[in-house]
Structures are given as C-alpha cells and as structure tokens.
Image 1 (spheres, rainbow, N blue to C red):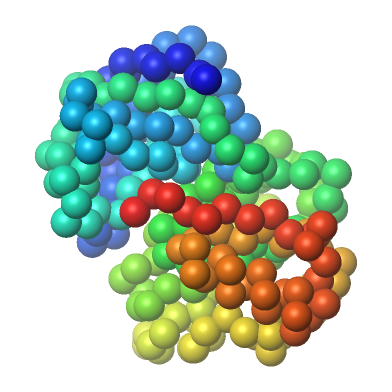
Image 2: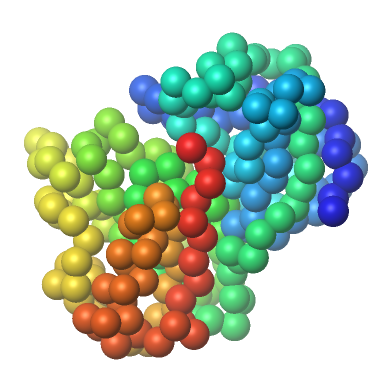
Length: 234
C-alpha cells in the first residue's frame, strides 16, 4: 500500500461549469504511470475520501493534478471550498489503466469526466513523441460538459497522429461533432481500422460495460484488445 502524505494545493483550475482540476505540490519525484489514480482524503472523516484519476502526465513534473466533477456530495462540497495553500492527504499510485507502449494503434472510448486518465495518457504520448496512432471518441450530453477541449486541441496541433471525435446528445452550432450515442456505425466511421487497434474504455460503469459489449458482440473485438476502467471519481 502506498504511504499517505500531506500535500498542499498549488493551484485550482475551473475546467467547465462543474469540473475543477486541483494541482498539488508533491515532495520528491513523481512516481506514477499515465492513467493511474490516487486516493484523496480531505479530513479525518472517513466520508471525505475518494479515489480519483490523475489527470496530469508524468512529463508534467511541477505538480500532480486530479480533476473532479463537483456534485452535491459532502466530498465535492468540501473540495469545492479548498484553494491554493490548503492541505489534503493523498496515497498514490493505484490502478492498471496504463498505456501498452508496444501498441502502435490505440483507441479511447470515453464519456464525461472519464476523460481524466485519458488526458494523462495522451499528454504523455505527445510529450514523449512515442509515435503511436491515437483516436479518441469522447461522448458528452452537451458542449458545456466537455472537459480538456483546449488541451486536446493543442495536442492535436503538435501531434498529428492524435485525432479526437466528439459525440454529443444535442447538436451545438459551431462545434464539430456527431450527434447521438457511440454505436457500431459511429465506431466504423470514426475508427475505420478498429480491428487493428487496442481499445481503452473509461467512463461511468454502465457506459464502460455497454462499450465492452458493443465492441465484442457487434464489432468482433477480442477481450485481449480492451483495457477498462470503471471510473470511480464521481
């Protein structure tokens, strides 16, 4: 079990109307793989702790960042009131949702705040210029729910082997996206070489299970070509 350490919040970033990133000052070298998660404890109260994905990349060495969708939970309300200089306790790293660097072609299917570990992995690939081809299909209700759009736009400019396809429940003027849900036809359209890619699935548990079944039963993707993470950070 990783040791528990107290760290200070370095910066808080508002990502959209209900999502914030918290950057932490962590002593010593950062020891995690892109895509892993951490345990955050806000106080001694056992109800005020959560497992949250790390949204920063190991290449971003000045801080460790987690990103949270803020709800009406006690944890979210307490977290929302914290700012630069406040302390939290963390344990890390946990999880096996990490990049197989031997895969030359990968695809991500994600929904909502499930994008956080994917942001970490993509930033790592881009910063290291690993050369693998990446397609991300990212589903949200509306454009206001999209997280890390500016980050992914910047990554695509510097790393042409990364493509992002947005899927929204409702159309938005001026925003390039598909409307509806991720289904077999959309995957065939956005990822025509899907049979050659390793798939990483991350989002709400129901979505992850639906995507796993869709890939296996409708598209014939083997379970060995899927990496899943039932996102815990709500």
